Length: 145
Image (tube, rainbow, N blue to C red):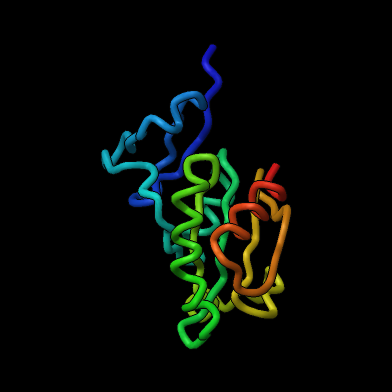
């Protein structure tokens, strides 16, 4: 029996089973045939965030941000660089607290940018404040299960 992982497609949100040993081989979605990883963060709505958290077999590193936040804009290219370093071991996503205020309140997001790691359907780590790519990668690797 092959050890496999569930991935939620970043394009169509379909659930895909991928052999864990093949995550780095450029898997494509079985439904929409788009690449499962593109080395950049995936923007998610509240509904999509909930689906990804509930079903992802790899940890999610979430950047909670807002359009009016200067530090959020400054960190955006750093977060994108971190995606290149962390995928496919981890999926990086962005959630706008302006577009998902109920989610931000539910999760207790009090300052932005805030990075949070979710694994197995629950939050396992959180860090507030902008960081350079290297620190994001180091923190995420140390904090993720």
